[in-house]
Length: 251
Image (cartoon, rainbow, N blue to C red; front, top):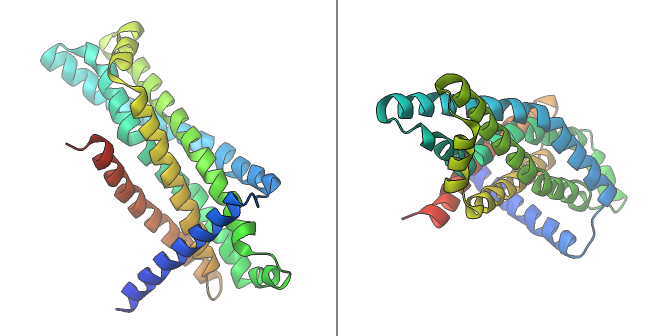
C-alpha cells in the first residue's frame, strides 16, 4: 500500500512538473545558454556509446537475416529492407532511449538529487528562482532536441553496419542492399521513429528531474533516485513504444 501511494505520488509530481515546464516554455521563459549546455552534455557525451550500440545491433540483425534468407529462401535481396524496417520502427528509438536513460537520465537525477540533499534547491527558492524553470526546462528542451538526432544517427549506423556485414558474409552488393532499404522504408517510418524518440527523451528528463527534486536524506537517497530514474524510464519507454506502435501500425 505504501509502495503504491509512493508510485502515485511520483506520477502526480511528474505530471505537475511537466505542466509547469510547458507553461514556462510557451511563455518563452527559457535560458538558451543553459539549454545549449545541456544539449552538449546529453548529445555529444552520448554519441560514442550510442554509435557503438547501434553498430552491434546492425551487425546482429544482419547476421541473423542474411544467412536465413540466403540459405533457406534465396532472398538475400530482402535483407536490407527487413533490417531497416526493424531498426527504424523499433530498435533504434527504443535502444537509443535506453542508453540515454542509463547515461543521461541517471546523471541528471544524481546531479539534482545532490543539489536537493545539500539544500541548494532551497537556496534557489529563497532567491526567488523557480527550480522547474531553472532545472527542468533546459533539460526537457535538450532531451527533446537531442534524442531524435541520436536516434537518426543510431539508425543510420545500424543500417550501414548491416550493409557491410552482408557484403562480407553473403557477398551482397551494396546497391542491392540499399535498393531494398529504399523500397521498404517510407518517410512515415522515419517520422514515427523521431516522434517516439522525442517522447522517450522528454519522459526521461521529466522522471530524472522529479526523482532528483524529491530526494530526501543523504548519498543513499541520491543513488536510489538514479536507480529509480533508470527503472521507470525503461518501463515508460516500452509502454509508450507499444502505445505508439499500436496507434500507427496496429491492425
